[in-house]
Each structure stands twice: as C-alpha cells, then as structure tokens.
Amino acid sequence: MGSNIRILSAGKYLPDNVLTNYDLEKMVETSDEWIVSRTGIKERRLARENEFTSDLAYKALLNAAEKISFDLNELDALIVATGTPDRLFPSTAARVHGLLGLKKEIASFDLLAACAGFSYAIEVARGLASQGYRYIAVVGAEVLSRFINWNDRTTCVLFGDGAGAIIFQSSDEPGFIYGKLYSNGSLEGLLEIPGGGSMLPSCTADSQEYKIKMLGREVFKYAVSELSSALNEALVKTQTKVNQLSGIFAHQANIRIINSVLERCGIPFEKSFNNIERYGNTSAASIPIIIAEYMETQGMKQNDLYAILSFGAGFVWGVHLYRHS
Image (cartoon, rainbow, N blue to C red; front, side, top):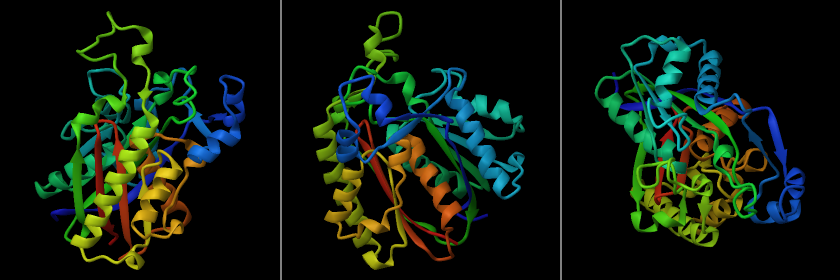
C-alpha cells in the first residue's frame, strides 16, 4: 500500500429542480444581468423537500462507483465534507453508510470546513492512506437552499445544492505532490450561519439566525489575496511553471474571484475548468463536481498536473497540486 493517493473515479449528483436568474427576478429585486456580471451564475439546483444532504451524497458516490464497476464494500473509509449535515449527530456519513449497506469495518465520519471541506478532506485521506487504508471515498455534499434567506438579494443568488464524490486509491505513485491548508479565525464573522450550534441553539435563535450571512466585498478581497498568495507559494516550492499545469479546479464561489486569482498568478483563464454558471456555489461539493465533469468530458491523462484551490468560511483555505497516475 502506498503513502499517497490517486483519483480512481469521480461522480456527481445534482437535483433536477432548476432555479434560474429569471426565477429570482420574480422573488427579489435583482436581474439576470446583475447576477451574471458579478458572479458568473445563470442558474442553480435546489433539492426537493424529501431530499437531504445524505441522499445527494449517496447518489454521487453511487455514480462514482458505477463508472468503474467499483464494489463500495471495498472502501476502508468514507468522509463526507459538508457544512449542511442532515443533523448535528449522527453524522451524515453514517446515514450514507446505512443507505449503501456497507460493511462495519469502515471509518465513516463528517468533516466541516465550509467551502474548503474537500481540500481538508484530501489531507485526511492522505493521512489515512499512510496508515494502510487502501480505498477512501471523499464526498462533498450540500443542501444550502435550506439555509438561504430568500429575501436577501446579496446571498440568495449565490448558492445551490449538489454533491460530488471521489474514490481515492492509495498509491506509490506521486499523486498529490503538494498540499497546504490555511486558516484565519479572526475573519469568522464575514461569512456565517449564526444559529443552530451551542452558541445559539434552535430553542433560542431567531429563524433568520439559521440563514447565511455574508459581507461580500470583504470575502472577495480576502479570497483573492490569500488564494493567489497560496497558489504562488505552491508553484514556487514545487518549481512548477504555469505552462506545466494541465488545469485548475477552483472552488466555484464567484467567477470574478477565480479569474482574479488566475490573473495575479499569471495563469490563462482557459486553464480553469468552471461550471458555476449552471450550479452556483455548492460549497464543499463544487470541486468534486468539477472533477467528475472534467473526467467525463476531457479525462485525465497520466502525468497531467492539476491545481486544486478552495476558500471558505472560517476563514479556511487550501491549495493542492495533483499529478495523475
């Protein structure tokens, strides 16, 4: 067994309920032109009333397994990265485990790092591989629509629901040649859901305290500054030139954030594979969804080198360089 991990398969699940910008025009004071020019989003998906985060995660993981006829009972670990779990406990991963009817000799747990959840889960998966875990599933899944204030035009246009799943295999090949995680807790108030935890439990919190609150300009500024700095550091430390990158998988929060980071790092926009116009910000799900769609449409070739970037509430962020094998 190797001490690194490689992508074996990737899958996704998006609810079939589409909410367009034109639909939002009827709900709040906004316009398609305003939303597209400032975010790049044209539509997003919303889970049905009877769809929960675990349901989306379950379907995305099934999709990843079906693509390579993988027996999910071969998994040694199941990590669900989410900021919108079904419940505080038991974990969303535990319910996915039950829905799949998996064996009991498997680690199943949730990881909460907001929109950077997938990046953080990569590092956990790498650590598990070094301890002998052979197959590790990382699922990013979110039902953000349940936490949106549909009267707040600054946030309701941004978020969508979805799930993406990656099945990793331990490997002696390079795999992730670089990974670094960051955090700055002094910025915690810029993006949050105040209610629902021990600070403000459900029995005392006003209903609006369960909704996403964001100071958009400040989030934009810090995201661009910190991500571009982190990506430049990754390229310098690995002696990687921009033309050696096969592609960029960036968290889909705002197309202007992504393009600003690429511009600062001297990376052509066409290097970035984006789907924000169709799904909006799906938080921890966005990067695995992108990877799944990239593998479906273009495929990863041996020795291709990709940068993975994420940034989320906390603030927490991460950068990885992945060489496919």
